Structure formats: structure tokens, C-alpha cells
Length: 201
Image (cartoon, rainbow, N blue to C red):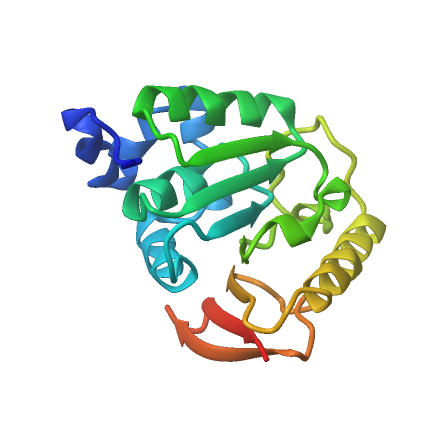
């Protein structure tokens, strides 16, 4: 069974950032450059993460679903999951998924600390905890922010990644690396070291 979308116009949304943003209202489009990964970054990441058919990839802090939707388009044989605590952003992600007709994408409205990481094979992380630091650009004011949460989330993710088996892959974008256990070895980096590729040994 093929998971490739049947809509002939689908390609148009992935030809530019502006075209992709058309999937969302203006208020969301204005957040794109600051908060969600560029399509080129996503493409490079999924080429590394989707290393075999039916692999399950989790985006930690998926926002409006851009990584998962683009990943599902670039790698239709893989499955993409996004975990996001803001219900409003998950709603936008689901609306875009329906419009695109992508069936290999799933969104979860929950805090990532409530998720069983062993359900997934590989991970993508665009420093979604960074909002908690003072002076950073927030998506909205619907959740609590604090340096304490930033540190807690980093420690939690560190532990969850440490518990994953050898061969687990991770891609980080603009990460400060506090969440990465020493058992993960960097195997590549691109875009002036902003995009990093890791594998657990």
C-alpha cells in the first residue's frame, strides 16, 4: 500500500517557504521564520532519519506540524509523529494534514514528558525548550515559561534519549546540546554547525 498523497497540486506547497505557509492563517505564518524549521533543513534531516521503510520518527515540540508534514512528503514510506502541548497548534497541524492528504503523519496533544519514547525509532529536536529562557521570542502566552522548566525539560529529554537502544538517530537544529547524552556521537553537521546529526553507539 502506498502512502503517497493523491493530490496533484501537493508539490506546490513544498516549492518554497511562502507556499508552505499558505496552509496556515496569517497569524501563524508570521511565526514561521522564528519557530519552525526551514524546508531545506527538514529535507536534510529526514534523509538521515528515515533510513528504512516504516521507521517511526518523533518531532519533540512539533508546533504547527511543519517538520512532520514536510517529512511525510519527502519520505512517504516513513511515519512521522509530532508531540505538542498547545491544543491550538495541534489543531492547525491537523487542518494542514487533512488539506495535504498525508496519511503517514500523526499529531499528539500532550506534554512530551508524558510520552513513551520507546514507541519511536528516531528523533528530531529544534530546541523547543528555548522559549523558557528570558528574552526569547514566545509563540504565545498560553503556557508557563521559566528557566526552571528549561532545565527540567533538558534533563528529562537527556534521560529519555539515554534509555534508547544503540542505533537510535537524532537530528538537532540550533540546539545548545544540553539534552544530548555522551552515548550519542555526532556523525555530521551542516549549515554552520546549526544542524547536527547524531547516532547512539
